[in-house]
Image (cartoon, rainbow, N blue to C red):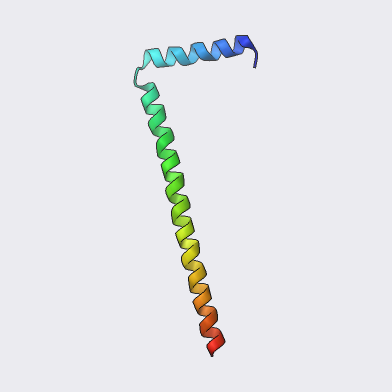
Length: 66
C-alpha cells in the first residue's frame, strides 16, 4: 500500500465517521457480537465433544462387560 492509497483510506474512514457519528459504535458492536458468538460456539462445541467422548467411553465399558 502506498502513502497515497493509505491517505485515501484514512480520508474515506474519516468521512464515514464524520457523516455518521455512531458508525464506529455500530462497527464495534457488530465485531463484538461476532467474537462472542464464536466464543460461545467454541465452548458449546467443547462441551458436546466432551459429552460425546463420555458416551462413547461408557458404551465401550458396557460392551466390554458383556
